[in-house]
Length: 288
Image (tube, rainbow, N blue to C red; front, side, top):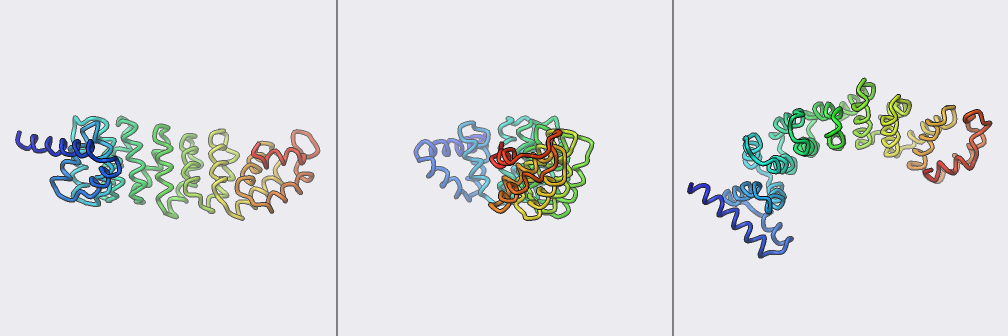
């Protein structure tokens, strides 16, 4: 009982500080917390609706393995409020210790967990930036609920092996996985992805083709310009040419635009027409 009373006093002290200080002063003060008692009060404050976010921000600035271990213990303890688990999943990424990878990975892989907790776990794995977590993040691309977060996290993990692995996953039979891979490749934006993504522009699923288009629009490279110009000048299918034009509009400079206008009389037939007119190319150049 004495311990609980002491803990509640610490939380009450933080609440009083919040009332008496400006928001900026309050957060600066919490961020300077170093004492064991102060850190304990911050952790206890995670269970308080009014103080949770402020305490989470402060704890995220404390680069301590001991704090990480305490938070992992709390994260794996039963019967805490869902918002407590959500905030801890986020804090562990801010602190950034690899010790948190197993519990975050396990959370991400468990579809029965609250989706917001899993999203925060994915984001935190990306912040920690460990290749160890990459496989779980790639698997999470199958899951619509956490797909975007997993893709963003993968974009933070710098690994040549990961890029090659994602390229292989572009041919996975699960269209959700393929779409997620295009999102991850967009975040990574590697020149090595140009050819695989160009092939994905012809995927049977529109959402995958859309994902590949957006990914290629984020790779600013002469090699990408050349590939899209090749598609535009050698392919007959209207859709893939339109996608190539949209990509070039995004990534190309004045010289590419000039080439597009020059190419307009020479482009392959479109739906039985003799040429793709200058007006149609101009429309693509304007993003239409």
